[in-house]
Image (cartoon, rainbow, N blue to C red; front, side):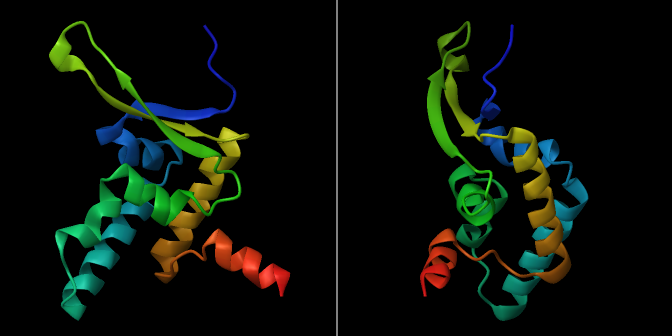
Length: 132
């Protein structure tokens, strides 16, 4: 059985963030980034659980780390059932024209952010700058 060439990841929603971090082989960078962000938020007095959503919530992770990447194609959800009704759940499908390039690009992004603490520039800002 062969998979769809453009499907980068299909995983239960609760495993999405760890699945992305694992696929791009950036666990060390991810831990450093999370620790840095927590420390910054606590030091500034702005810590709240919502500020840490990117660490576990697939939509927040996508907005923060994936959506601006060149090789990001999209994200969809689908309901999948198991052998028993209580085993069903939402799965996240991550799409890319070149999944391996997406993982390399994500690894580079996590490395950059863990080293510098800077956040990505959104695509809309980039396209606006190019049109000036």
